[in-house]
Length: 231
Length: 243
Image (cartoon, rainbow over all chains, first blue to last red; front, side, top):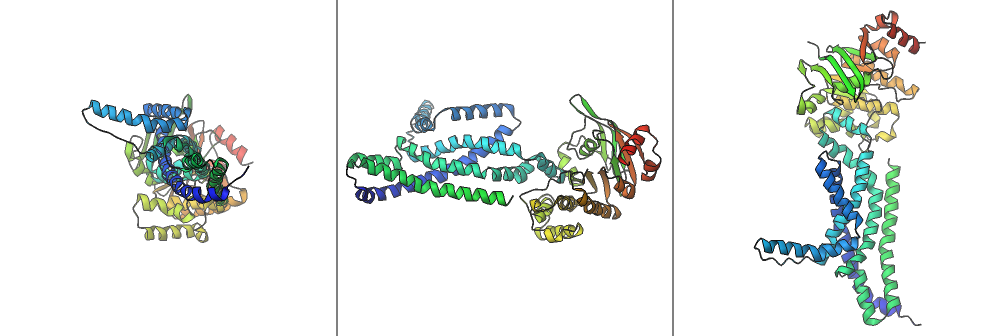
């Protein structure tokens, strides 16, 4: 057996760096959106409007009960057929073509939003009811109490868990290869099939993920420790 | 006209009747201390006064207006009624200073500088002028409770409600908190204090109310209550706590 790591690195490396850009972009945008989705879902599920709570619970169950990869396929291939079909019926000519990266970001926002909403919801429920009472007693409304005191404390308590999900999302971007996003895995696969440098290519790919995720989880540990100290 | 007039107040949690028929009236500048065994409904009564608990029946008149049915106006009313809790309930992510100045800036639209100045003044008054940038978790229970008092005072309430303010404190920390409360009483603050501190009741109260089983059993001057209680339940209770 003979390996050509140097050659593989020199030719695949620059392409992977571009891929890292895609991964970081998708993760940053996807994760930020997923936090917003999560907060809205959590607040919706804590609302007093029974039908809303029911609908959101079912939605979250559906998302959590199906694989992320299938959701990507669904958003990328199926949703646009629906949209085009419906607008055809209404008499519009549309040829909506969703971009693969956009489909990925939407998929992440929804999927991770559902998982993280459970984290935020339980963090909100876990806040000492005395906080609410103190806020109300000062003259704040229920909404203000939520906004000023409960949500900030709940989000802060959730930060360590957010960190775990962030690292997971970085790794899950590899699923986007299946819907043609030019991220790390797809670039590597293409390269390996052209050059037959299979061992080299996928080893470099794995290292690439480690280079991103190890420092990220280290950073999360540090932040977590800081938060504990300042409590 | 009494500042606060509680009439036929009742409160049930499901089948449990905690308050049956409570009548209390508080004049401006008066210090009323409420005593009684656990489960007598003292705290529930206090929580009904600022509508943290919705009364099941009866009226609560504040400056002649029934606030039980005030609906959305409740936040306006609560601004005039300060509350100090057994477990302090400070906001843990805010500094001591922010805990005190947050509500006036947000609710009374007080300018930041003005609110800060006033907050520092209040914190000096409760003896914590040197702790303004600390976080609640860095303070002792007694210090936290004094911050909580300053926080309530910052809204310039007409009346302050104390819900067992020293029950969660180590014995050696109780004194500082009571000292602050005595000072407030001396300055003419209207106060309703639910407490087990009989010494405080004797020394500071204008009137002592003894509650038991969801009723006001007896009310009188501290001297009369402590030296010559009329009702048997009052006698039994005082014999237990003063032994």
